[in-house]
Length: 255
Image (cartoon, rainbow, N blue to C red; front, side, top):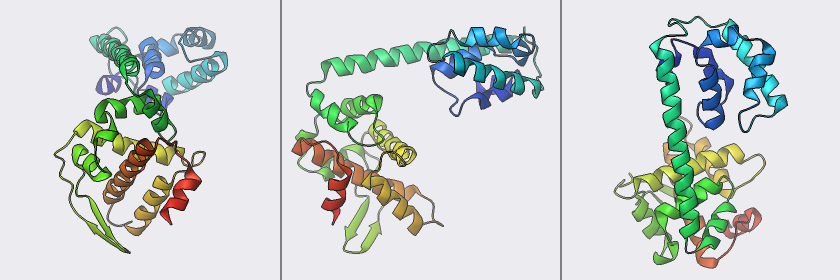
C-alpha cells in the first residue's frame, strides 16, 4: 500500500504518526487519491471523517484541514480512476479483515486464560497494554512452570545474553533458538516503555537509558538485549510472588 500511495497521495502518510491502525486505514480508504480531497469542500471532508469510529467532531475538523494542506502540496502520477486506487482500497480491506481476526483471537485468549491474574500483573508493568499482556500470556504460558528466569531466557532464545559480575559486563551473543515471536514482543515492550517513561517510570527503562549512554558509539542493540533480560527477570518475579509492579519497590530491590 505504501508503494501505491506514492503514485496517488504520498503526503497522506503524514496525517498520522503511525502508518497503521484502523483510523489511519479508514482515512486512506476515504481519500486514497489527492484529487478526492481537492474536489471536496472542507465540510464534506469533515462530515466523512466524523463517521470513522475514534474520530470526534474536533478531530475530524483538524484532520480535514491537514488533508487539504497535504493534498495541495501533492504531485500525483496515477489518475484517481486508475487501478492503483483500487489496489489501495483492496489492501485496506484486507488489513481491516486481519485486524478483526486479530481482535477475535485476543478475545479468545482472554476468555480461555486459566490465570487471568497473570494478565493483570503484566498490565501493571509500564509499557505493557492489554494487547501486549495477552500476547505475552499466549506465547509464554504459565511462567510458574519455569524454575528460574534463566529458563525463560532460554525459552525465548536470548540466552546466554549478558553475564554480570560485580561492575563487569560480558556481552555474549544470544542463541535465537527459542520463541522468535516472544522475543519480538519483549523487544517491543522495551520501545513502548521508552515512549511511556515520562508518565510511567520504570527501572528497566532507567537501566536501558544508562546502557545506551555507555555505548553511544556501538549502537543500542546490546542495551536492548540486556534490558530484555531485566524485563524477563522482573515479570518472572512478579508472577512467582503474585505481585503487581511498583517502581519504587523495584528500585529498592536493585540496591
